[in-house]
Length: 162
Image 1 (cartoon, rainbow, N blue to C red):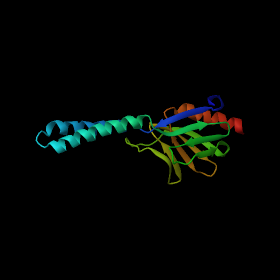
Image 2: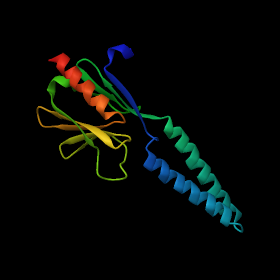
Image 3: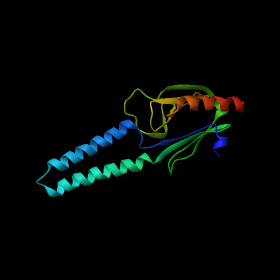
Image 4: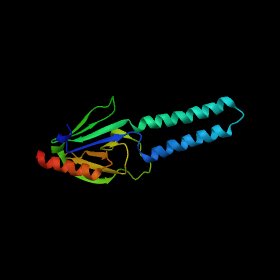
């Protein structure tokens, strides 16, 4: 199966460094509150349980696939989590391919198929994204950890399809 794809990448939900840092700061707060709260046993136990719970959820999220990007011969396919619809983009309709930064913000929320202001966003992590503009002017912003390879594969598939 892998031989027929020009590019394949999986984006994982819990591997963005900024959100890992936020979760670990929350865990640190819970464990410090657990250590400092010596008199009140029930709230002390609650801080410990919440801290351990955040660690367990973070570990599960590290292995949870948010979406998968596949560049085939004629189509770009984005498949998301369980209830997400499959997004299939015809490479024949792509007019422009650019590699730019995803956003100027430090914290970016993971999104899948978010339609906003004439742009459709797909993002899990990383600073760079591939911006695809189709012939109708619709812009697809697809976050990637390997944006150069992704853009090269799209351009190569576009050449083969036309």
